[in-house]
Amino acid sequence: MREYSKVSPAFWTGDTGRKLKNLGPHCQILALYLITCHHATMLGLYYLPAAYISADTGISPEGAMEALGRLSEVGFCFYDAPSEWVFIAEMARFQVLQDGEPLDPKDNRIKGINKEYRNMPNNPFLFNFYGRYQKLFHLKECRGESPYGAPSKPLPSQEQEQEQEKAQEQKIKPLSAVADVALEIILKNEALFHITKADVSDWVKLFPSVDVIEVLAQIQKTCTTTPAKRKDEEGIREHIVGCLKMMQDRKETFERIWNRYPSKDGKKEAERHFRATVQTGDDLKDIHTALDKYLDMLQKNPTRPPKNGSTWFNNWKDWVNWEEPAYGKGTTGGSERKPAETAGTRAAAQGIATGAGHGAAAGFRDKSDEWT
Image 1 (cartoon, rainbow, N blue to C red):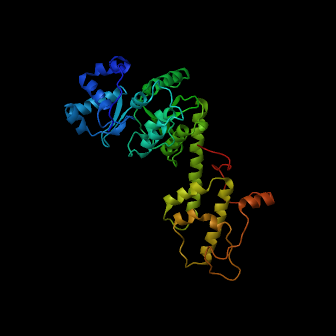
Image 2: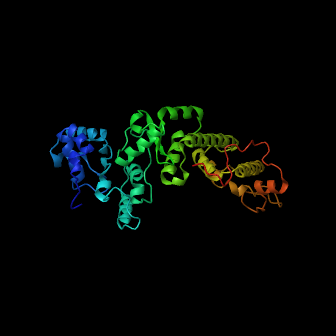
Image 3: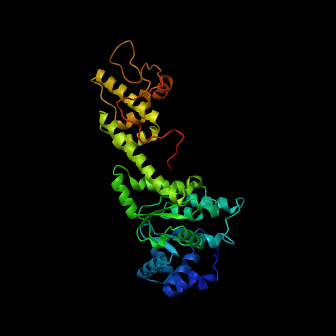
């Protein structure tokens, strides 16, 4: 429990203060309570059951929930009723920082803030907190996910308002002006690029085999946590489409390989292993080689049942170098394996393409390429 909280005179007279005043006394009381109550933390992100609010302030439970909703409308705080967690958007800035500037990297408070954030129970606002305060507090770990269908209203701050003005100049609509925003991706210049639900719908139609939301969330998280991988306004949409096309190609390639595999158990995990291990054109050729050898072994051993799909796709590389022992038939995969060259070394040595009859390696990159 904290012993004190900072409350600036601007709470009553600043822009936010005037907005709170216009919302009525219940909203003013609740806003002050959220900053000063004994449940609060300096980060402004904490567990707060509605019953506590009613008991401490005298506002009825219905009135408290209504006031929370109105405070959310002006961006003062955000409340998730199912989890009963609240996020006061600007509280950490005013409680921790002196002038709004990032903490010095040597500041002892950085370690404590990182520890508090790292140990905080799971809640819906972890990702939002990281996105807002990563630079200011030198946060090392991004927690939580950016959910699809995120609130169409922003978590406003003076810094974000400045970013939105920049976005206007760059002809990017600010989030508050877009009614159907699905999610945002931060750009090189730190402006926000907005992806609408219409964009998502179009991409779902174009790439029906791909989990579009999963891909977008991964790109968003990468751009949030790794500034070097951010794109500019012109490049971000091309990058998204390229990633979706690559995933579509890989999905279709997996389906073709899966149709050849004799066991149909464990498909979901098999695809996950495929995506993790088949990254290049040579990998694609090698997995075809491995499957050819495994199917040949099963044909020569008709009483041997095929492995669960998840198991085989997790270990398919064991079969690239497999050769049937010379001493007889009826062998099992894994015994008496003789080293053999992979598709990559064969292609380098012979100067010819391998994996004939299996199609082009569409959607697969060189090992040096990165897609997120």
